[in-house]
Length: 315
Ligand SMILES: [Zn+2]
Image (cartoon, protein in one colour):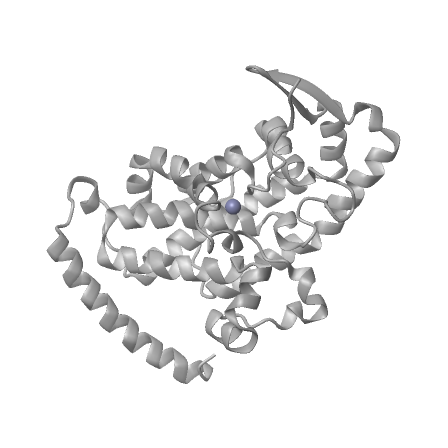
């Protein structure tokens, strides 16, 4: 008999969660965007998990999905908000070691802004799908701690339990109406707010499971047959009890992910001058047109950055 602990790998929300978050983010978009996103909903859902698929092929990929805030101790709060300053102070190797998700969210939003500016439909879709992925990961408490799979507290498998098993079992009951996307004038600040908010929940995620397991170890696991394999999963009753103890946490974090994804998609679009996406439904720009717009973007960016650096003292 072959035993596999289902979803033990730390994949971030599991496929189900990422797909759900990207799909639902579409419905918060304003009229100027929603048609284009709805038309490509299948792609946005399918590509929502591409960053996880890349993790084992590309060395730089893994750190983009998490940040071990506890590795920094009390100085986590004073980590530089922007990548340039962080790299200058701590060095890239050290940053990569503890994860870079908040900085990567800001970077991806910036890339998406460029794609909108250039009006490149393929890039808009790819970056939207992947930005949604990183945003969702940043909102998972266990993506903000060294103890990401409970390995330091003898709670192996809790990562997949929280982010895959619970949403799969209970998300049908969730209220996913998160309202209309709004403009975010501090994208980097929003990414940091997300990881600190998620991090504040780490203690509950671990403690509630530990307390539950004291009296309910007999119902902790079930064995399910899938194809030819027998898989050990967290038991349905055990999952329900844990879910109740978390008092809506998984639902809240999914809602935050959906709203933040929509807000950042919308913000990138507004910053790029609200290009008419309806034109991209039927028309594909030529390579030459894309190149020309890319040059325009570089010029625009250079001017904006000069202005910004004057304001913020280069930070
Ligand atoms: Zn991930």
